[in-house]
Image (cartoon, one colour):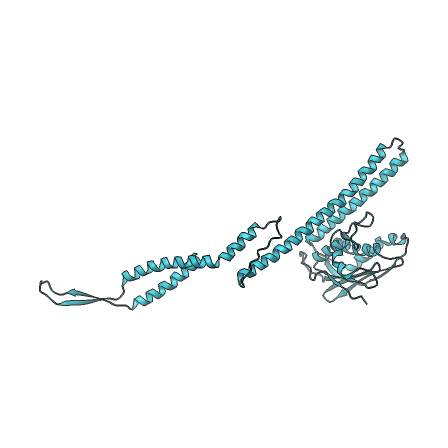
Length: 370
């Protein structure tokens, strides 16, 4: 209220003082001491102080009243926005301020807050889905382990060989659980960003990843053709996280492929950075489904992911690591089946810097690659 009353009072005071400053007040006083004296002397006062004082008091009261009315009129929408935003919590993020009927700064502020609440609602919903899926995936091997052990212990004819087989099965389930926990930790690390950057060559990371998977490719029942064109590609960041990104792309390309299919890995230097390109043949991916595949615990046909087929975290890790390194991630559905995934990293940077936001979001294009 004072914010509006003080300027009104100040401007009124200046105008009133300026108006009264040129006013002359004449006062007539008798001359002489005799009772019959009729002579008078005129005295002139240049500033009517009493009139000015009374006017200032009236002006101050009027300023307070006008300030109160103006503040009540113009701050009412802001008060409504404040109360509405205060009532919205994590349990009712679906509510909106909805300040309609206005076209001013308050309506723009309300629209901005509504957009923020919409993004928060989507983030909370995604987090709830992630926690539900993660708890299910963690509970499944524990339940299976308990069942295997209970069956082995309840069998009166249990032999050493059957116990040994049960132990091997429990170890396999434990390995799957360990793999899931490692994937969750990698995903969390990628989402936290990169605190310490170091220079490295993307081609060296690709060679190491492909070498680690050579035995796996050799033992597959259906052979895959792996083509690698690894040119020098200098980047800076966390080589461990980038290795996880490339490993998950290659694993995804191997797992979701067709008999006699193709896996192509290319690294190269580009203007201002380095480029990683991974292509694979495989089932046809609808272009509208590409972005969903980069969310946690998602699979192309929407089925629950069975153990041994991965946990649906590979491409989510790819997106998180790319985000942490400020890289551009573009995924393209091939008309003949499979995906083309291109990750463009910014060039080497000096000093320790934190990972920036994703330079360009995940994009899905329906056109086929060359």
